Each structure stands twice: as C-alpha cells, then as structure tokens.
Length: 364
Image 1: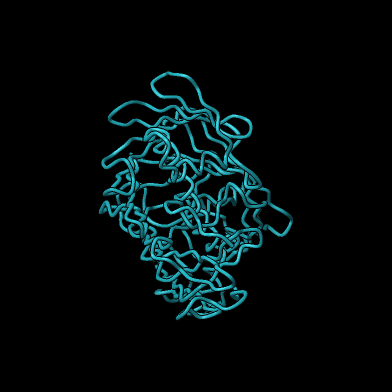
Image 2: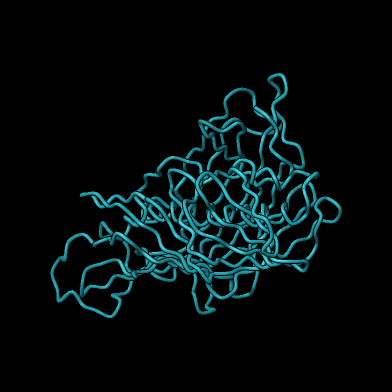
C-alpha cells in the first residue's frame, strides 16, 4: 500500500468502481413506509408492489441554514461547496422482477453550477471562490469514467474549459491551446506543485464534483436500510475487518448504527442518525483502507407514491424550497499508509466532513 496524494479526497471513487448493485428504494417498492399519495388515490384494495421507473430526476441543494458541505484536509486545505440554487441530475436504473435496482449511469445537467470556497493558507496556490458551471450534460457510468460533457471553472484570473473526451479530459485557459490529460493524470494534477495554478484548480473542481456525488450515492444506498431500521431499532451492522494489524488505537472491526427517532411506521418527516464507530471500508482493488468515524444525520425523510399510477414519485431527505432537514455530516474520513507492514494514519490523510445538503429523487 502507498500513501495517497496529500490533497486527494480519500473516498471510494464512483467513477472507478464496477456496476453497483443494491436495492435502493425497495422500502417503498415492496410496500413499506407510509408516504403521501402524491395527489392520487388507489381506490381501495392492494395495488401490488410500487412501480419504479427506469429514469428519475434528482436534485441537490444547500441546507436551509447554508451550512455548506465542507471538506477540511489535514494538510490545511478546506473546500466548501456552495450550490447555486439546485444541481439538476438524472439517474438511469435497471429494475428486475423483484424490484431490485441497479444504478446504471447518472447525468449532471447543463446549467447546473456551484461555487467552491477555498481556504488553503500556503498549501495550495489559491484562496478565494471559484465558480464551476456545467456547460454540457456530464454523463457518468457506474462501471467506468465520465463519458461525455463539459464544465467551465471561472476564476478571478480566467476561465478554464474542461471537456470530457475519450480516455480523459482536455483543458484550455481563456480559449487557448487545449491540453489532453488521461483520467489518472487529471486527478494527480491537484497535488503536483510543478503545475500552474489554473491546471490544479481544474483538477480540484473535478475532484470536488466527484467527492460530492460519492456522498450523494452513499446516502442513496442507505435508503434500502431505513424500513429495516424501523423494525430493528437501532440497526447495528459490522463494518469490514481490517486485514493485518490496524493502526495503533483503532479496532480491527468497528460497526455502523442506524437509529430511527420516529415511532409507528416509517413516515414522511422522520429522522435517522447514521453512526460510524471505527468503521473500516476495505475496497478489493484499492491501495489504501478507509476509516470512518462520526455521524450522518438524515432529517425530514420524504416518501411519496402516486397511487393514480402506482409509481414511486419522490424520495429523499429535506426540501428543495428551503424547508427544514437534509443530510448533515459530522465525519472524519481517514486513509492508511503502510510501511514495511506497519499501518499508520498521518494527519494529512484525514478529512473532516461537515455541513451537508438536501437531496430529493423525483419522478421525471
């Protein structure tokens, strides 16, 4: 195992993992929960399993108190993501006969934009705010890299165009010469102190998109646990076992706990606490192990079925119009370094994640 780059985000990379299979949304698809009827009535009787559509829109926005989703790296770099209104997205699904869902790909829609508020001291060649604007729909397959799209990074000194092409990206500054980078090269630009600041800012923008959407889909993954959590409250699951001897002071195997604060049946407005206690994630093909500690609060659960068509209409946490709730983080995410069989977690390999976002998955 080797140390990660000192500014890179230590999180599982959705652009790199195989197709992810999980039963997201099956709490409602199998009849669980007690959401609203979306304006319709089923007219009595059992309508059968709720229909999950092959495509859903989903939206991400700031928390109502503007407690921005923020990552603070142990090396001194802090980045806050300030979403401009709504991030507009869609996700394509495959649904089998048992209503189990496979996420196939997702798209970040053109005109979506966010600001990155960067505080870096002397560890990164920029302090201040840059705008990231999606200029062409960005499509990401869950079994590979982004396949198409483009975004601009607007800085005080110029505009960087980032265009996704086969095998990587092309970067240009203020309409100048386009420079091609493979995906690996693009990710590594962030840490390369020999590169110009504008190139590293482009890499930071791409990494920030990746970091945000990794967490969004991790939260989507927990949706299929919520009904089970109401029946086994609190729901406690073991995390991965650390292979070898873990760093000093860390358990070889921790756990995660989902606690429901409601009663009766799962209903719109319910809250959950998702607690990580020395929780290892062992990725088979990754060079490092990741450790999570802390809490994710899932507030103001939303679940709506349109009984006119018996389809899932909406599910998520929080509101898109400034109402209460959302997904709120108080986490540390750490990566190991191995040296002659001894594993440690250097301070620069620890990211503190705070703030959060509201997220709603909705019928198109």
